[in-house]
Length: 476
Image (cartoon, rainbow, N blue to C red; front, side, top):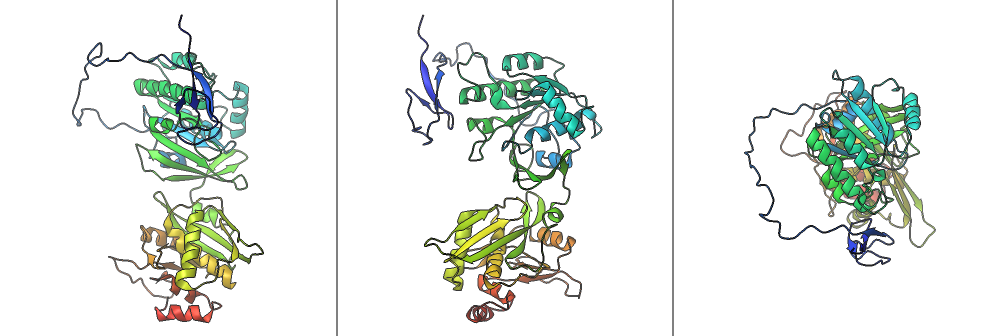
């Protein structure tokens, strides 16, 4: 009998090595090679021998549009694109303890009880907790009476035998995919081979039987879903559950969705009774804001299809170190370095020798360039010790020459600010549509600036040379 050969597989990228090494040659990760038994290779030259010819069809079929399965949790359905699609696979990742299992259990309970008017058959398979532990969480969340079928299992063979039948559940949740294993693979659960093979078998069953598959995935210390990157390509939707432990807010963000928009977010608040929906995130993020404070600016942003207002805080302090400190929470540190460079090179602001701290209040992470102008306003406000007008929102992208570039969906940002009681907005010049708004006493005012120099006209305590440079280019 031939001896089984072993190989070493990188748990970060899935690359195969003939012998162990401290560093993966493909991705450069250290201490990620794990020994696994090699699988028998498939026979070569199978083309035209034993295979069945495919029956190709046209793009226009006779099937009607597939009805989505809504959970009645509006924030969850928003991120999914309006509800769950039958036969689809959805992967949810997040940091440990962030609330992934809580979210899945609440969604399963809502689907099983028929809060949306359609009661569905739901099954929850836990590989990390016992049945009593799952029941304990359900009792705390107040969903213990929901007709959700529970099981504790980690064997894919047993799970497949329970699901591969005509009366399979309509919604199946697996918590988590890293705990599942196939007994025909000589590797530990959570390795690249096990995660890939287990997910492939579960997704095959979901497509064949037409049930919606919800997979919970662990993340690495870099914030990526643990296991092979191909796992995110295999599923139809990838959601990330984000949040800071010091804040009660949780953000459910779609980074891939074959049946809906990407970059859509849902906002939740963690309470003693589980996750509660936040229908107006802007009011919640600005609820604890202190008015008339130097170093603070309100940014009118867009998250997915939803306008959202958040507070950006900046602190500029003299540095006692040779290399000043830069600390950024909730924004891109490289983008902050660019804004500081433009302020020094194009506007003559000596700010680089100071320690600079930047924070997005509420634990939200901002990724769009439209926050450049709000960050610059907060930095200058902290530098000159003068607050930005409390009733003003700021948005706009800054170019390397100091110009303020237009951003998308400006009208949606202005409407959200006006709805929340703000009176004015500092923004880039608009093109194509009317630039003038009503100028009555109670009307919402827009102030358009074309260059970053004009930003200094907001502050009376700004140095006179900077204010004169701004006045030379026109008033705000």
